[in-house]
Length: 186
Image (cartoon, rainbow, N blue to C red; front, top):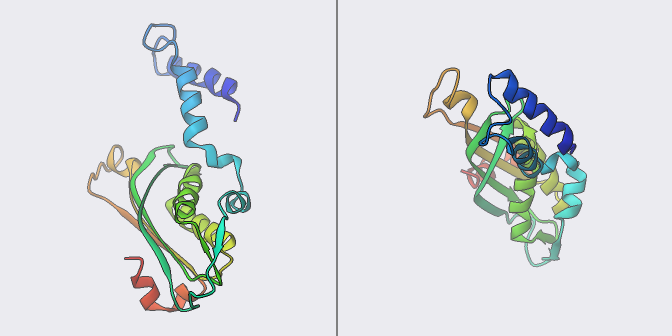
């Protein structure tokens, strides 16, 4: 990420909206914004494959049958909408997968969700990205992801509907056809 370029453009943005970038309260704003963007958009620097490799620590679990799902619920993430660069917030992610002899460390599931969210995103793509990463990291084709979140492009501007929530679901493998597996993600 080119922080110098971000600082330059944030300074120009401040000028464009009629602010004085050299006044006391704004002098360090371009650098602060550049640092913030590097942090909250860290996932932009990685492909789904690279994230799967980073957080793909698995453990042998041969005693877990192919019909037993592992589900983690209420993983909190936030992201930024690629259309308005507006915050997508109060997002909870539920992830389920059927292990194929190996299980992911539980913290790795949350870390995958967090890193995939650290990109300019669409909620629909975020669910697909998480499902693809979990599938590769866990070595299973059977993954389900459900996300519920609020979007400030809906709640703070435009229609300004503060109670609007968006729900998306991505199903791979056995989760596509099995309604009982889908219910685990509710």
